[in-house]
Image (cartoon, rainbow, N blue to C red):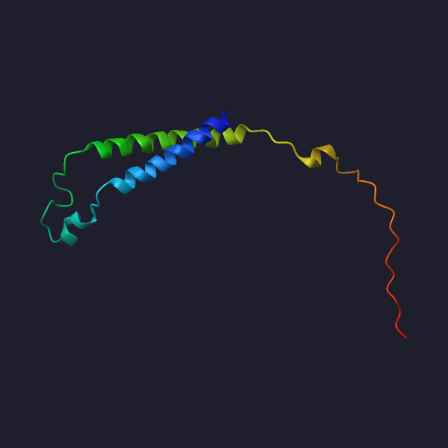
Length: 105
């Protein structure tokens, strides 16, 4: 289940990137740098076209998959190597001779 939603999420990420990049820029219509003019900042906006609707739907699906992945990742159980080796026990050490530093003359 997690893998399927993750795959859908990745595809949605790329679609969202493409949908945003395809749209025309609207930075120049920001009230013509507060001097008024073509389409005021809070005036009547341009009619909503199909790309705005598509971007909105993709963004909603992106948020839903993000929240679903976050919930599923908290419910995921993982095993730990510390559970197989309790705290009081240690693995048997190999038979090694202690290293003794040489004395210099």
